[in-house]
Image (cartoon, rainbow, N blue to C red; front, side, top):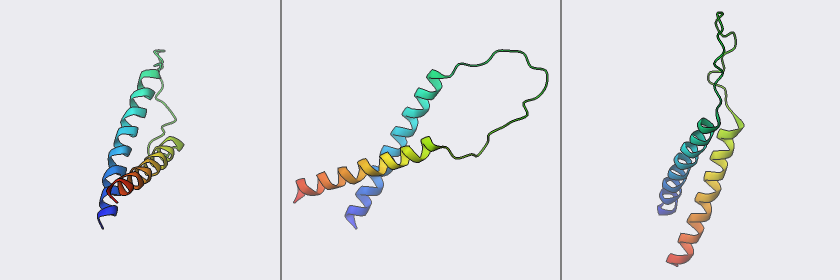
Length: 76
């Protein structure tokens, strides 16, 4: 049970760190378009899943698993 708790905590922390970091990088690289448009935007992309979210979760899970294995070896 202790292994699962360590995995969940490390996964959650890594996911939050990677998500905030990728959001920061994406925001820094964003170039806003300041052109004047009188018509409302016809395409909105709310709620669509992206590949970046999946990759962040996959990387977080992988690193949490590696962290758990290293921690387990050190305690044994």
